[in-house]
Length: 125
Length: 251
Image (tube, rainbow over the protein chains, first blue to last red):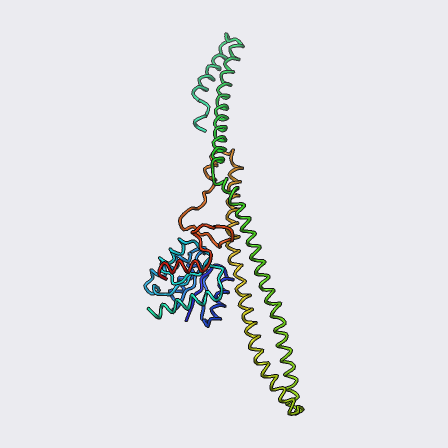
């Protein structure tokens, strides 16, 4: 399982990376926004994407749109982990095809639950 | 300047009249003086017009500045709001520091105790290797080893959960970073407005440095929620609210 973590704050990338490692996901890579993340996704055989929303350059919602518009990537599960908590934003992310949405600050337990739920749904589909 | 420039045709006409008056022997001093005054008046007219124009511009600029509601917003809403946000930054950084220190204070004795018990066992083990242990002592060591295994399991999981707690506490850097960026943007905006205020008497400069309007597009990003702020129904209070909303959308 290869996971890409996209967040402009390196501390947050490190937190998520460590939490994923605790959950047994050791194969992770990092990018600091959509502009650097998208090429990695396109060339790297990733199985999962964890992305922030508010980033300079390409935002998480634009990265999500780009992923869904890319023939090779369009089925990639995407988990958004962001401080944006407005209703219209969550609805927008859902409409653009996000698989899970976590608001910061979050707990290790929440991350585990959402990831489990995403894979459960994919297996049942 | 063109619109208020000196009327050159009129000036030429008056100057030529003055020269011809000068060349004629019959012209009286009074006559010359009155002609010079006429030429002077041309210049004064020009000055008055310029002054009038400047006064009007300054007045317009001041009115425009006064009517720009963004500046009122800055003073009445945004600056107090920024203060609250910065207070929240202090609270979050303090909480993170305290979390880390609490885990360390709790964890250090645990690690020390494990180490101390291990060295007691090590001493017993060395005695055993030297065949210095009696049968009773050997039995006691066996019990100690078992107890140590159980305890080390318990303590290791305590230490590991402490590490996770310290790790999670570092999320303050992302959240406070976002809030501080918002405040930096606000300070920039205030600076722009102050510059506009300084330039207010300058010609045409207002147009270039007009106070920027706050972004109000639909997808404006709000950043981290600050407790006691943004209490509208539009904003999710936490992960549970988000989960409910997503469930209502079929997630």
